[in-house]
View 1: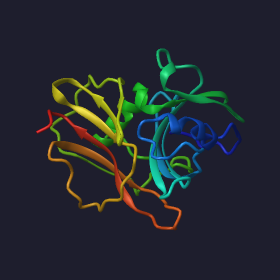
View 2: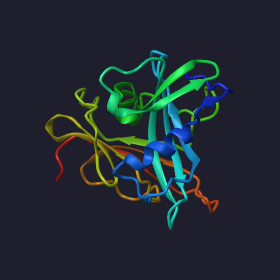
View 3: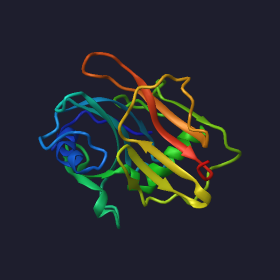
View 4: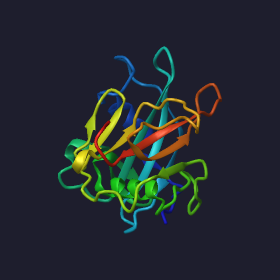
Length: 220
């Protein structure tokens, strides 16, 4: 169970993301600095208790229209071997000391726990309260048994999201640019699982939409 510490972070998560987000191909803003606000998200527990796992939603109001982004992050007490390209930055944590923050799509611990969430083996946890399930996060899984174990962390970014491939055409896709959609909106025909959630917009509304979609076979 992840413990939420009430302490300081230097720099803050939003300060790290202000520098990092404009380098992503799915970032919609212009040349100026983004104006970010925390807008939602959830956490997952690392079974080993070593890695912090957070799915953060941030809004950016620097452009003509507000944009919402899903930013999966992992927090580690030491660098992750071979993941230098996925490093978002380092922070000084008031309790835990130096923490290395990574784009979680490149971290095998986050990928494994996201699959466990889709399959219903773990619960999404509240972003701000220790040992409290997040009831707003929903998931589904239509597969028979566990998903393929050979998902890689060779994540591929495009203009809308990040895709992690596996064998036989399977893939796990994270929606980075969030779009409001009703809960009863149909999933892609090849989808066998999903995660959805809600976030807050600057105008006070709270839409819902897809966070991640699992495909366990080739696209049709």
